[in-house]
Length: 116
Image (cartoon, rainbow, N blue to C red; front, side, top):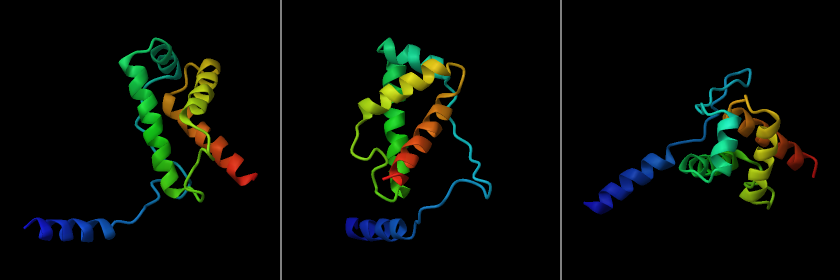
């Protein structure tokens, strides 16, 4: 029984392909409603929300890696460097959505990859 289930799951997973979630103009919707100011407060207050947002950005970047040509959008850097970048961005743009900060982080990381 378990063998049949594993085969069915394997076939289903193999039939799934990566899809571009953006429309033809490159627009997409990101469901992240926290502001950069809320991120900064939560992160530096060492709160559960700060930990959750740090985990979210790690998951976001892992998803970006799925389509990254190198498979590593961070180019060997680490999440601590990401947190510093986000801290700086959010300090300068506290009213921006945290998802907007994530978007600009990825754009900068992609530009760095292309310049190598």
